[in-house]
Image (tube, rainbow, N blue to C red):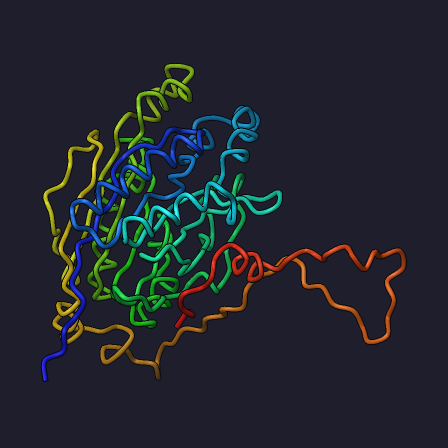
Length: 353
């Protein structure tokens, strides 16, 4: 008997959003989704916080200087269950394509670095958050929790996602490998910052992180990477020093095979567009046969990982039996937990492994 492994075309976005403009960025996202589908893609992946753009202002000056952008950034961050979110889900359904959207997620008064996986029927597979924002990102964004290190069963295969320097966290990566991840979305902003002065932030190191993930996890890695537009530079770089810190371009979208090979010709770093690769999940068995760090190539008697996947809800409402809460209006709803908010935004397609 011959088993038919899933085969499909994947697309990774290399483009700039309409910075700090949620509606215009969604308009552009929908055009890219339609283009990918017209070219036969079954999945399209977007860069880190592509809606409404990565907050480059946090790297260019003091937090006090960056406050001039904060209200606008909040106002243009995506809220699950909103009309803006529904547009994205409907586009996935209309074009019969899985969408992995990178966005700033707004819940209540806080922001999170979100990745929203939507299947080809427009249904939510997962709404994850970056587990630990990197460096000055913590001045803008809150943290995810252990439930965000999950891999999901879909019609295309077992899919997971991480953001940017989550790919430098060995234990987080291992947690994903151990869940038999087959398709991994590695969402990056752009490699435009501190060029020549901070090698670890450059394209070579960060593309290597995506490539090594493919080899370690024996999975396909789809690594979308944004560009910085001329308009973004004009808005943010208000003096000569800032113009040296943040450069136009920086797009390095890549798709890697389970053996680490680059599967397409790359775009120029200042070119907007999509890169494509045809994925055959049957290739994974060949890579796993050589080395499976979470399987036959592991030594659990020597080292093993503890993974706490309990959701980190900020408020857990309860009352003791028979207790009365003075002054409480019984008709006033209690705050929803994160899980309940996710369920109210869209039906869940699959449970985490």
